[in-house]
Image 1 (cartoon, chains in turn yellow, purple):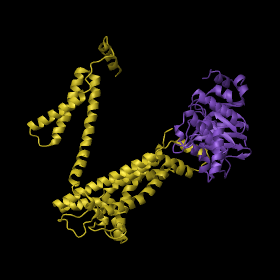
Image 2 (cartoon, chains in turn orange, blue):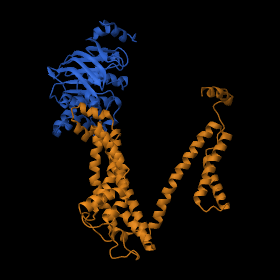
Image 3 (cartoon, chains in turn cyan, purple):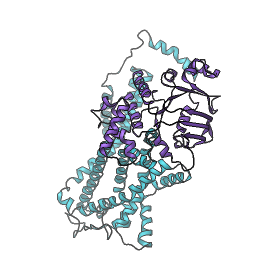
Image 4 (cartoon, chains in turn blue, cyan):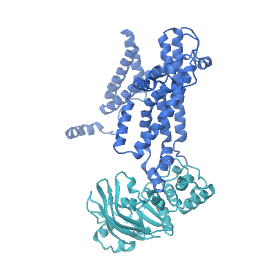
Length: 359
Length: 258
C-alpha cells in the first residue's frame, strides 16, 4: 500500500507540471448535457430495438449516463476527478430511480382518483348501493379509519412513550435489554398475525363481536414498537448536560424528565408518533379480520362492523367493475391525502415546538 | 448562608474503576477553593461527589464521608435532591435549557421545585441576574430563548440559574474553559463577588485563574494512567504558587511536569 503511494508521487508531481493548480475542466453544463444525451440515446435504442418496457429504456439511459460521464471525465479531467464524477452520477441515478416509483404512484393515484373525488364522495357511504352501481362514497370508510387509528393511537402512544422513557431514563439492566429485544421482535410482527391474535383472544375466546375497537387493538400492537423505537432515539438525542443541569438545581428526576427532557424532544417525538399513525392507517389485514367491513355508516367503534379506507379500496378492487375501480382509486387518493395531512401536521408541531435559537 | 465542607477518606468509583482514592480536605465557607491538576486526575469527579452528582453517572459509587456543617451528605436517609438544592453546580459547557426563555431558565430551579407566585419569581429572577452581572444585558429580552445568548452570557445565565435557588455552596467545573478572555474576566469578577455570600469550589486547568480567584488551592495528581487520582496537597493559594511543600506541585505549577 505504502509502496503504491510512493510510486505514484513522482507521477503526481510531474502531472502538476508548471501550472500546478489549474486543470482542464468540463464545462458546468456538462453533466446536464450528458444526461440529456443519454436520455435521447436510451430512447433511440429503445425505439430501434423495439423494446416494449420503458424501464429498459431508462436502464439503458442510466448506464449510458454513468459510462459517458466516466469516460469523458477520464479523458478531459483525469482519473481522480473521473472517480468523483462516477460516484456523483451513481448517486444521481439512484436518487432518480428512487423517485420514479414514488412520483408515478402519486401521479397515477391523482389522475385516476381525482375524477370521482368531490364533496358527495366524501360525505356519502355505500349504503344501499351494490358494488356494480355508480355513485356512493367513502364517508363510512373515512369515519372507520379515523376512529380505529385514533383509538389505536390513544392506546399505543402513551404506552410506547412511557416504555421509551423507561428504557432511556431508568433502564440499563436485564429488564431493559429484554424489553428492547421484545420491542424489536414486535416491530417484525406481520399485521395479519396481530389481527389473528386479537381475533383468537378478543372475538373467539372472550366472545366479543366484530368492532372498530377490536381492529384498533390490533393496530395498537403494530404501532407500539414504532413509537417506542422513535421516541427512544429522540430521548437519546437530548444532551445529558441538560439532565445534569436540572438535577444539579435540585429538581427531582421525574420532574426533570417531564419539564426538561420531554419538552426538548417533543418535536421529534410528535413526528415519530405521527409516522407510526401513518404506517397503521394503511393496514388492511386486521380490519378484514376484526372489523369485518361494512357498507353503511357506523359511528360507534365499540359495536358492530365498520369499514376503513384500506379495506374499502381492497373490497372495491375485488368487485372488479369500472365504477368500483374508480371508487377504489378515489379512496386511495383520500388515504394518501389523509396521511399527508397528518405528516404536515406533525411537521408543523415539530417546528412550532422545536427549541428556538433566535436572539 | 455559606457552609463549610469536610471531606474525609473519600473514594469514588466508576463501576469497578477507582477514579479517586482516599481524599480528605476542608473547604472553608465564604472563600474560593480551586482544584488544579492534570487531566484525568479526578478533580471533576471529586467535585461531583460533593453534591451527589457523581452517582448520576451509571456505575458511579462513593465511599467515605462528606460533612456539610456536621451534616453527612451520604448518611442514611439523606435525599440527594435536597443535597443538590443546597449545593449548586455550574458546568464546563454552558447548558441553558433550550426550550425555555431567559426568564424561565433562571426561574427553572424554583418553578420546577414547586409553586411560586409570579411577583416573587420576578424578584428572584432580577436578583439572580443582577448577581450574575447579566441583568443589564438581558433585561429587555427576558422572554427570548436563552440559547440565543453568547457563550459567556449563557454561562452567566447558568450561574444566575444556580444561585436563584440560594444554595449554600456553589461548585464550578471549569466554568471558563469554553469562554474567551473577556467573558472569563467577567466570570472571575463575579466569583470574587459571589464569595462574599457563598462557599465556592472551582475546578480549573488555568493556573493563572486559580492564582487570581482562589483563596486556597488543592493540587490533585495521579501516579499513572489508570491509577486513581489523589490529593497531593491543599494550602493557601499564595503558598501553593510560591512555596509548595510537595515537589510534584512545584513541578506541575512551573511546567516541569511529567
